[in-house]
Image (cartoon, rainbow, N blue to C red; front, side):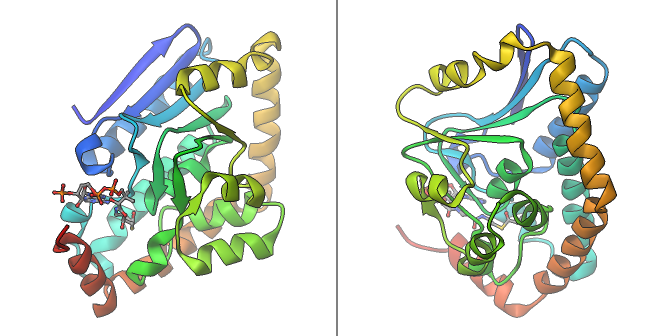
Length: 253
Ligand SMILES: CCC(=O)SCCNC(=O)CCNC(=O)[C@H](O)C(C)(C)COP(=O)(O)OP(=O)(O)OC[C@H]1O[C@@H](n2cnc3c(N)ncnc32)[C@H](O)[C@@H]1OP(=O)(O)O
């Protein structure tokens, strides 16, 4: 199994379990995120959702290039992008706070997943960035839309998207992408982040989350995400994209 869903008291945790390829996303992990969403909707006692990656190296390295490289045309890429974008919107709009425990690198689609979450607790050793531009595509799972929505400074968000590179944790904090940066043990970091929040009734968290979701519905965030998906699928079929992916997959270390 390439993912795990575990419950610890009122916290539901989703772990991507593909550390050998830096927790890249395959179809089974997408299925797992769907399962996570339905579990939360069917259990009103869940207070928080945590998404993380196995190991110390990576939170998530984005789409599994060895699989998704097989998608050539916009027509072929669109269903994968659209499905993941929909699943991620369902994660972003879960009725409880969602925390990305960024235990290691979060690049490409991995950075999109973390950006869709309400909070990002980032290891001081991690790097994160929207590196999709270096593969001649844009974000395509909604991440660009979330970034432009979530960062207080739009110029910084645009710069991150257009530079298409990974940033160190301190820079991510300065830009407003990281909620907190932690040293050492991720479990301790999570515990201290949640300690004050757990003193507040879960119904209060749920009410604030609804406030946020209403705002996003009002500004048609989902419609904007659908446009992002469409544009990404058009860039996907260009020769430049396929060459860049091929270069990554065939690089010599
Ligand atoms: C769907 C839209 C998208 O998500 S587009 C973005 C796709 N993602 C990427 O381009 C990121 C590619 N990965 C990386 O940049 C690096 O692997 C990062 C995450 C920075 C980690 O570096 P480092 O710790 O040095 O590991 P490494 O590069 O030696 O990789 C270890 C093995 O894992 C593999 N791997 C890594 N990422 C992916 C991926 N996204 N898809 C498929 N395989 C991936 C590497 O190829 C490497 O495999 P191997 O050990 O050489 O067989």
